[in-house]
Image 1 (cartoon, helix red, strand yellow):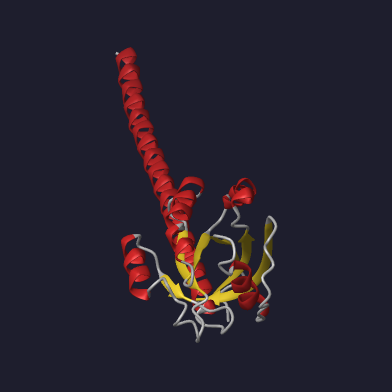
Image 2 (spheres, rainbow, N blue to C red):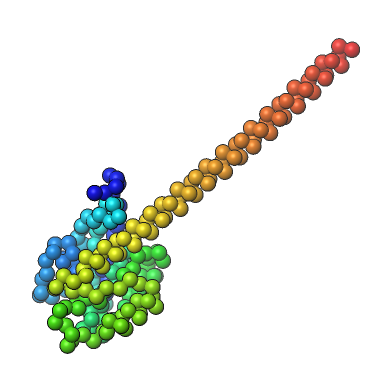
Length: 225
């Protein structure tokens, strides 16, 4: 059960090279289905799912962005207002892993530096061992260097898919709540400073009034003499 009626809205992007399984991850997470036939995404597609994280209701809009180089111009426009990103590579394709740094640099270029990021090695299927070329240790080492949470997933076998999406949403929620707390504290401090200034002004005016009244009494006594 959510702790209040408030709903947090998050835009989460899935980025990476073509054919790493971005669409499969999205449909597995939202629709709980898997389509084995590869159909390249043209431009951008998105789906919505509502999550409850730490008793907060989070409505997540998941954007599946095209990884092909010819669509890069289209893709960059969708970084705007993103709260989190899954950076996906294919564990059976070393070239897709080598491009992760380029995608990370692009995120840092177009997004706020505090955006939630999670590294995902997809297609880590149960029978992948003979075809796996990106070793888990190498990916973990890179994720530690870049300070990124890391998951190996399989959209086909439904392995760690929920964990990856929940983690990026949890990080986005944490940053949203921290930002709100800072804003609330700044407003409170500004209000306290304003009240303090007002009290000081009233105090000075009150003292001035008493002094003025005393001077007036002296002047009246002088005239009586």
